[in-house]
Length: 449
Image: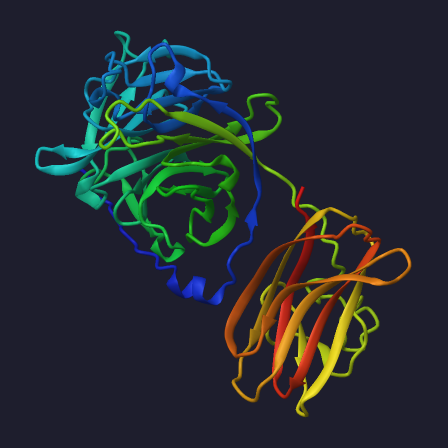
């Protein structure tokens, strides 16, 4: 009798996310666009990606539903997009993703019913010759729906395990092989656990990748972010902004050496474009290669209000005012915030010189504000005042204005342009008739270009 060791643990992230501040998004830049629609045997709807031996595997679940069908739904390509070979699976009706391991196993997910159970994983060992579809290949399969994944979308292999993201439940399943060393699903000696990622605000998890203890998760929505989460706890670690990629229908993700420099790593994101159900003749599939880019320097010194080298209780680099201090009890980022507190309808300003601004340049401001208690009328403004060479004020740009309670941390985001003739500026926090407490944190001003 085979030992069954199936342990399913639901890890709710709602409490974790309620207590932890949201992760700031890391910008990305597009490095290359591979138009799968232009291949000799095109892929109009690439739905799955995997990195194998420095090349990419691409699967397409929809090509058989279009006039472009040539009996091919699996491609092996270079990282620059040249087709090495095109293949067919035949055994699957709805390929959703592909993953590989070091033992020459290729895993395919399928979200259609088999034997009354929706969701299946096919495992094809490509044999000692390392070639798909030859005589030494062996294939088997198991039901994913039997352990809860009735809509398997993303696949990844890492840390000796197969990872499956579900397109309906917002869960990621991990299958660890038992003593027999094979991944066989429920009813075998595998250990199956799950992560519930619905607390991250995602449910349709189309793309999945594993890298160094992290899961890279891609949701099915236009310009979806890549979420990097801890593979054990499901805690959100980092967010990668994909807005520059202009994705219409993101469907898969791979992570590996870049197309130009193997020493650097890139995200490869498949985009199905228009859905062939509503556009039966569409042929707009593509794979977008993006890389994380360094955030430009913050022109605001001590924008997190962390530093107080002389230990006077006031954040360094900001002008002195008795009503403005450093606070360690309530903060959004780091360990401290700036605190405006006055009991007597105080009116004052706190400023910082910005000496590195350039006329005509566009700047991006971000900052967080919390005003926990209701009360009397007040006004709190965050502004940039621009000055010319003779010291005269040229223009004042309002970044945000607060006149009511903000019980939760509220983010201010705005782009502003330095007017012609600018040689310096001041970031100004203006308080009027304050008889309460205002917290500020995470101020940054960066060059947009």
